[in-house]
Image (cartoon, rainbow, N blue to C red; front, side, top):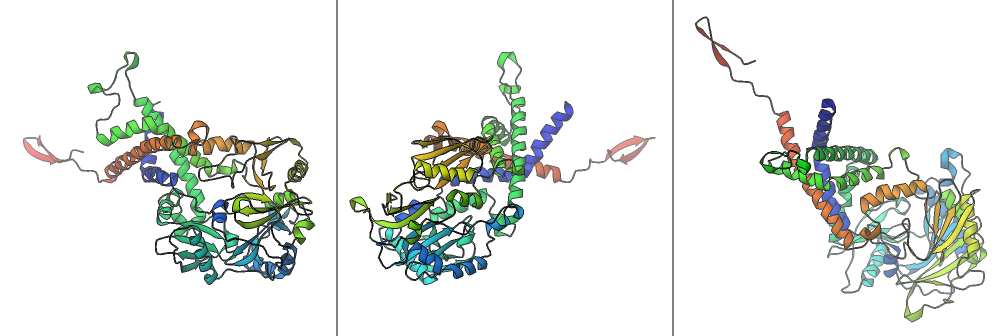
Length: 542
């Protein structure tokens, strides 16, 4: 027991010294994360700033631009050095993914009509609707895009200026196929990042938005490691720090409960009526903040550790490109391939401005949607196109995705559940309702969510991901039950972060004092004089 007690204190003491600054930084940056906006522009934001489409009859069909751009697309894919996912997946054991159109959007960029096409290999291209050429966005065109973007925001128009073209932006994630990015700014501090590949505005921010990002996510997720060339080690370092933080929180919580003596049932307490052993200011605050907020600190540390997916404990959240290709089906329907842009069949009501036409497909069915500036989706009733994907088309798509696994049930949900819900800063474009829920009959009880209006595969949740949802998201974001709703969520988070800040600050002070004491040279005892045989003799105390 003495050995265990010594080990408990030593582990907590030295891990606390090691992690004190990190723990304080994590709690501090957590507040910034609470009120920061996503770094990637949502579909609603992109539509709100888009140019009016006004289709013209002389524009090329999707099939024509796809055929005319075959060689340039192939060369562009090789230049971007993106490995075709289907050819090497699972160490080459999977068959190649057939190259086809996955989704196509028709819109205007810098005044020009463009087909934005995503293929089944995950590559995205901007193809001219006038001549079918592969379109690259120049710095001059990026300035036009930026000016249109700022004018759509209303108020006084800002004059944008070109800052730089960057190959990689830390503030954007998973955008390798869209780089490089044109960096555009204004005098009042607004900035945009525009893809040179497609002309899409991927990031828009003010000075406050960027301050919250750099003071929040950038520090919280150890992004500075990428800035100094250590990005490949960031995941490993996060995993190790998360594990050590969990151990430090757990040992501290155990020590706190062992040393708390409330005096119930006549048990003895500490001197001077204290229920804890510390008189010193910082030690006392460390004790009480740890005792009261230690459980939540432990939950945050443990869930942060699990977010690194140690040992691939949890399955991947997203489907592979091969699975998505099977879900869509092989051939592009003729209605989608051959339709030539023309006046809208179903006009937008109430004077809403149509800014985008989107083709989606499932199997041999295709669907054309007109997106308005306010995010409304209007099905276009064309010959050969469906106004909405039916249950048969969605069931067949899910069955292609599931392979030999049977579909246990298929139902439409009109409300969110514990595994499908909008996070803060998300809206109906990201998490639409109603949604189709397919329950697969596999051992993992996989749930597949689909958007019934456009057939989009929104996500999957198997048993592993359901456990992850409760062990990570519930314990890290507290996004369940009545805690999900603001301002209840804000109050809850701020209370516990406040305890964490006190715990972190006191850890820094106590750890620094302990470290100085441990590293300071030991003082030698003063020599003493003794009488030996009637003579005085000086000797060291040792």
